[in-house]
Length: 187
Image 1 (cartoon, rainbow, N blue to C red):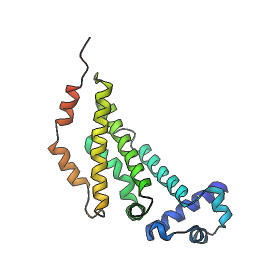
Image 2: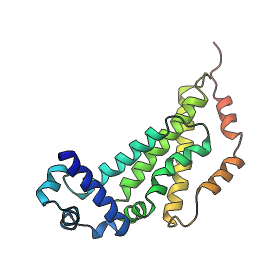
Image 3: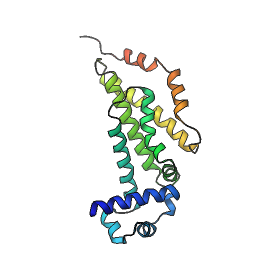
Image 4: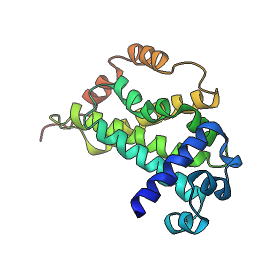
């Protein structure tokens, strides 16, 4: 019964976030909509921000499970955007609230996972210096994250995938060139 209540609270909260800005949702409204009492809510969650963090973490974990291998730079953004496209209104309501940091942290996690996954797969058979790999991951992660932040700040008006694909096309070869420059010298 406890897991059912936990899931019901999360599902109800997500539904409410699709319809209302975060700052307009109270525990009182949530428990009323969910059909439970306040004590049941506080048994499962400390407060609304704790609930929100757990929901976002659940979504990030599911995205990671769905994409165990990333095969291209373009796919990095696709993986990172999966959560946003599935819950666009909810993400925008959170992003435009005082809890923006939760979305930013989660998107940065998604970008880091996707970029590291891509580089682990694409350079696993090459002797790339550890420091160079870390710099590459940081560079591409920040590129993806920056593109998403700019898009979120613009209200997610357009589809970000096509401009990012074009950016990747313009940069084709640059990442590979950096990888070649960072190969360890044979001893």
